[in-house]
Image 1: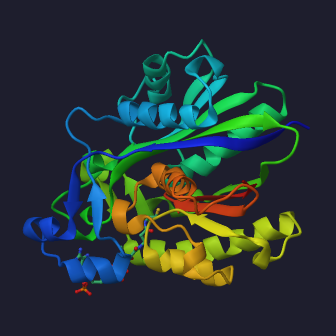
Image 2: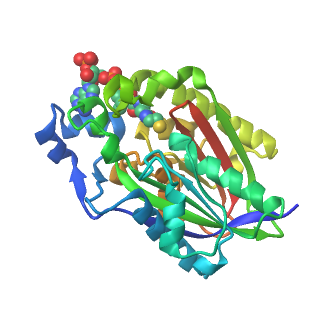
Length: 313
Ligand code: COA
């Protein structure tokens, strides 16, 4: 069995920051409501020239640099995104062209906010079965292009950005386990359906909230059980960043104080597939996450899809 480990992380955030106060000018909302209900203070929004591919490539370059690798070393590119630049070719192929990697598999994964965890799972199995020793797993989103900026119930929640990791073959894990699930019976609660609403995000916030809290609680148990680990052995929770209250509920389940939870939702909003690698990169670069720490990554999103990864960093 060939194990794999994260050996580099990177990110890219658009320069333009949109505060809650700016949103007060656009829709009937208040900074206070957004802070209290979601924990979000601001979000980054892509400029005209920024795309899922351009941000993904930037984040990937940073992750390769951190790993001491070059694009020539890459054996596969997995891009998790809900906002591909075109229907086809895949945005992963555009990223491959921008990076100038050798010919290798490159494809998009669509599992909405759980996409990065899905990508990590696929990459780890590719390495485990001898497919190659170095994989880029990227999450990149321009959600601002599928947000209805006149709908206060959704437009305050989302942001743009990209995060990336390099996964490399190692003798020791690394990735201890990954867990993926989907249940399509709930597809109507969170969707972008061109024939229903003109290709904008539509969400039944309350119901999604309840499902997210319950489901993430269950996957935490599943992940710990699979590794025969006690919750107190987890050093860091690196959660999907949708809502501060959902994150806090998962932290309570793990009996982790909030100082041990990586929170970026206040600065980034919900960046869907980019949110977990963006949070991971932030805590690695500011020195909170140290070599040997045990990390619980988890995500929940449209589909519904959900997943987790337990990692010894
Ligand atoms: N500003 C002010 N009021 C707002 C508002 C806004 N931006 N958006 C909604 N409201 C209003 C609603 O119209 C409603 O008013 P009413 O009671 O008069 O009808 C009231 O606030 C409460 O709305 P509700 O939807 O019950 O609020 P909530 O406490 O559930 O919070 C979310 C809304 C969206 C923040 C919350 O449900 C959530 O985070 N859900 C999960 C989101 C998520 O995780 N999505 C992605 C999964 S990946």
